[in-house]
Amino acid sequence: MATSSNFSFLAEHDPVFLDRGVWLLHGDDTKNGKTRRIALSGALVELLQAQSSRGVSEWVFPGRDGPAKPIYNLTKPLNRMLKAAGLEKARVHDLRHTHASMLLASGVDAVVVKNALGHSSLNVTSRYLHLVDTSLKSASEAMARVVGRAAGAEVAAGEAQVEGSTGGLGVAKAV
Image 1: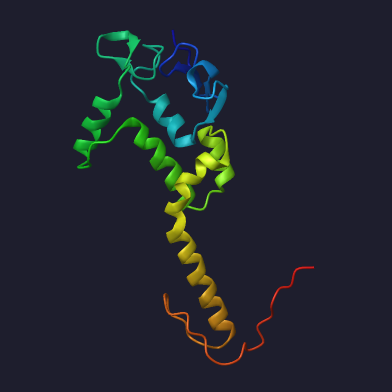
Image 2 (image 1 turned 90 degrees about the horizontal axis):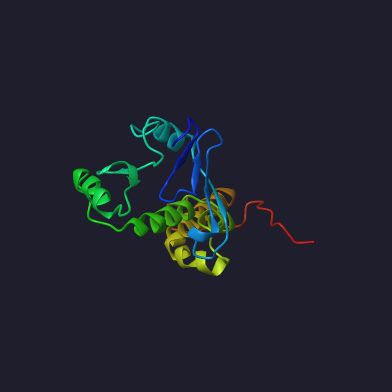
């Protein structure tokens, strides 16, 4: 049975430690066979602590047949929630891809994303990097505005036209 700080997600040996904000995913349940510690956000810990099954079932998501069995297929409940929110159907694995894409797009380092998702190499994580092109474009436009201001020219987003001299703009040199 569940303790005040311990739930199982889908496997009895994959406990969620709410007091430590950690989900311990054993190697038997990972693609690469390695045990992983997944950090849980404070907001997620609060949601899990408020879960109605807490203290009644050892499972985070008990099945409809009672608290003794977990939900094994999260697709149907996920799609009911998505429909209620006015969103299209999705696979549970799509949430993983969305998670990686959103982390990278918000500027989280690719190595951190690799570790968070348990990818075996940065190559695996790099499949999501094409989604960061918008962020790179934004960074490029920001740099054009900085250079433009230093040169005394007004540079609007998307219009990197710098006229005149460098206006005292220094260039960083590698030593």
